[in-house]
Structures are given as structure tokens and as C-alpha cells.
Length: 105
View 1 (cartoon, rainbow, N blue to C red):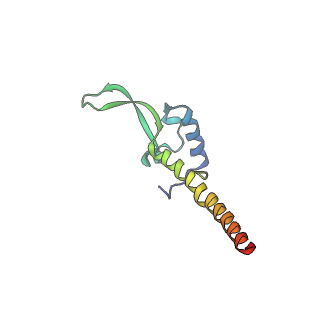
View 2: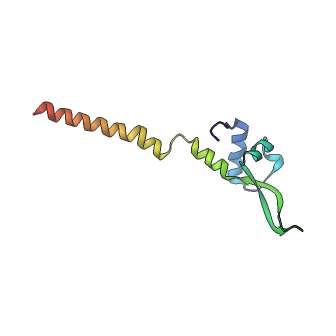
């Protein structure tokens, strides 16, 4: 998953799919590659075929791999903020306070 990078057209297509969960295959840019990587999943009807398998309605929605990709490539997440911003600031403030206390005494 780390090595897969979405193009601008794919990201734009996914942005539209966030608001329309029933997108036909013809509106999805680079459909076959995205389907292989499980970024899009088919929507099913309530009917079953002769082998008791669900029947697709020809439209697609965003898959779980897309949401994992978004979360993984998000810049502003909680772990990043705590590890790279809050902890260094707190350590810096504490070291300044300790240094001033030791110098002042």
C-alpha cells in the first residue's frame, strides 16, 4: 500500500465518489487498476442469481483500501501532531524552566 501513489485524475475521481456512492464504471478513471488494488468495490442489489451469489447493479463505491490510503497519507493526524509538535514544545519549555531555576538559585 505504501508504494501506490494516486494520480491527480484518480484523486479527483475519488473526491467525486465521496459524494456519490453509486458511480458507474465509465466515470471512474483507471478503473481496472483501482479495482485490482481494492480502492473501489461493486454495489450489490438485493437479488441473487442461480448460484445464490449477489448481483451487482453496475455501480461502484469507495473501498476500505481507499480509506486506509487516505488515513495513511494524511499530513495532519493526531500521532504526527503529538510526536512532532507537542512533545518538542513541552520538552523545550521544561528545559528552559529548569535551566532558569538552576541558574537563578
